[in-house]
Amino acid sequence: MPFDGTEFGRRDRMLGKLDHVIDLLRSENKWCKQQLRTRNGRRCILGALADADAESLLSSAILNAARELTGRSYGRIDRFNDHPKTDHRLVLATLDRTRNNILLGKITPVRTVTVARRVRTFYSSLARLGA
Image (cartoon, rainbow, N blue to C red; front, side, top):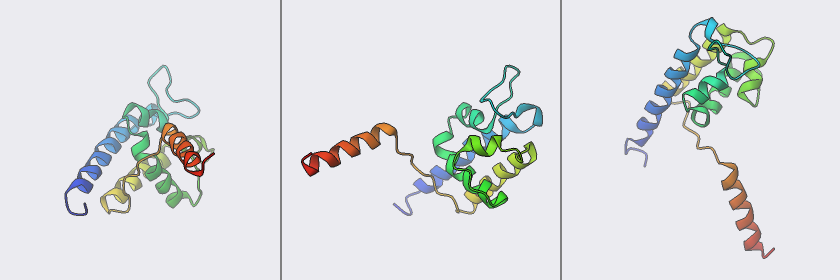
């Protein structure tokens, strides 16, 4: 419902998860490209999202912020993270923009549809068609 407080709870959850991701990537020696994680504790954005259990909650918001800052649509977090022009400063600026967008209400949590759900929907559509 619009005023039942659930939206604020979702935003708080998004912000909490995002803050965890930011903490994991705060210093340049904690960020990397081309790998989820390195042996010495570095992470790419996707690795940090996985460690914060936030990939499905925050990926689209981060990609929107990356597009706003760079003018380019990446489609996937790893494409943004590993792009030749992406550096640590841009990663932090993107995460900061994501945070600001959430605070301003520009971002609403997107529930991702799992592959299993897509398959179920596909088969139920076929069943209704009599196939």
